[in-house]
Image 1: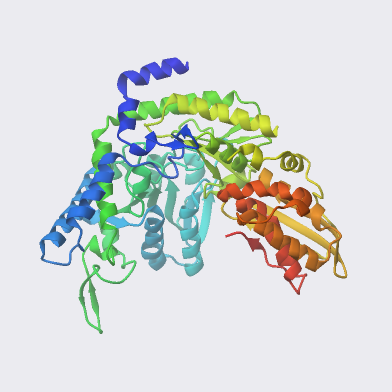
Image 2 (image 1 turned 90 degrees about the vertical axis):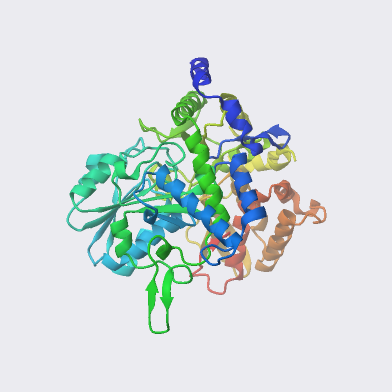
Length: 416
Length: 151
């Protein structure tokens, strides 16, 4: 079965050619070839992204939107052309709808403070799901404390699936916002976001989708989804760290007060009154992460240049192979068995704590994430303190998963 | 670096069969320790006879390093005075973090923790229980001890 999967993807997706574009994948860790299976935490950078950032730093850096001199104009053009690429990449309507932020976390906090806080009244409800990352829980808890609104949590089942009916059953006239993940970082579950958004929309509920784990795995069309806000981070889609995007529908962004005050977000300042700048600059106070945004723009080019269907088929085959390999290991329990999963596997091994497993795998050059994955309510649900998680990218190979399986067997020999 | 140096037989034994594991009731002091980075959680309960730790037990969830360290610690400090136990805390802390730490023979079984030093990501696993104990021993109000965190 594994060989069939290998043969199928070999015909359509050239893994080795993809790997050659990522210099870090050639490195050794503890004398072993790196098997990087922690893409859900942060993906690696292709050479073209590294070069784009390097070229900017060497030849074009200056502050943007500030000067009439050549470098400032070049930096501004590069930064804004990255925004243009993102408009096309997620099918936003215009540049006004793409706000550069530090990452998904800042994007959600921006919406919580700038959209939700002014409109929420005591007794209003914010609806999330049980499988959210802390970044899609805590900002809402903070705004609930500030406004007297209530956080309502839609359940998931034992497979880690969130069902449309269960979420819809909790929608009512007090529900003002639905905020949920597109893909669960801890379980891999792909949520039925299109139908969730439609149900929310029909009831006048504003929607925010945490796309951090989805953006690298599937094409995202915000107009087709119909969401009001969509948040994601650059570094999970092969771009630099410290930059990300908040997509927002222009009508909503227009009505929202600025998130932070400072330079860039103003048109005119006197001590009596400040006039705010237009979108998107209204939400980009201060000097932004210019090189990061430019690197992200190049990552968009890189992803757009891939055969994404073939890459997705390869990632699905990796998931299938990993599920088969791990299922054969005695005492290993896969956490998150949804029918529709992104290419990651969370698991627990009886008698082997995830941190010990992480150290033992690292000695073999295998990088996995261990811990609560910033999703403690998910861990509580499955009554586990932590899991190990292998998360795949299109550049991963089947033999890396075989090495993972062998490493887990070695850890079992030591502890069990 | 050798994994066998981290997971020595003493560590594996105390992980498999932790000593002084479970509740202690009644206790004179109870203090919680958290490692928020990894989700480790431990509750340490102490009985004090004047200045002496007459009994000590622990409960919680943790990796092999954190479980074995807590188990070894409870064995080592039972019967010791507060001052002696705090001195031992300093000594173990040095063993876990200082490459120039002198030979650890006088520490007995606790010397097995020295392998952790080569794994910086795991030092907190071994030190959580010790910080938790030190916080209890340094406190003047044993009835309301704040939780201890490694971060």
